[in-house]
Length: 164
Figure 1 (spheres, rainbow, N blue to C red):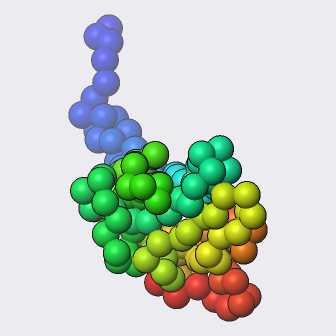
Figure 2 (tube, helix red, strand yellow):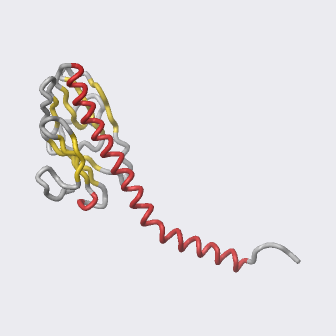
Figure 3 (tube, rainbow, N blue to C red):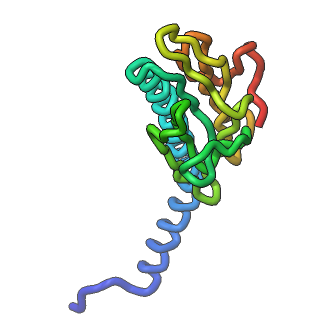
């Protein structure tokens, strides 16, 4: 008696695998987008904490800004290429490039730079909005208070829906 599978049995198994894969794809795609957004939020939070800490430790003003070349602030509100913590003397303290794939999240700030002052714990209040292809419904914001403390929200500082 020969052992093995018939062509019909193999095609039935392949069809079942294809059906299961097509049903699970949307869930995996959303999981991937959530993961990329979470990584961008964590990077933005880290940058705020680093700028605040460097201002306190070094006793000088620090700026958190977007950068395109990893050396200078871009002066733009699109921070998607990367984040930079830079001192008032121009020394780069921390460069945080963002791994933005073709469908990766975008980061936009409501100001070109966030200033952190030493000693007083004063910071420029700001909102960094993280968006992906899902739009405003899935957006997150890192809101920096006057004391320099960040928080994550799905609403802006005025408790309005985020706009991407």
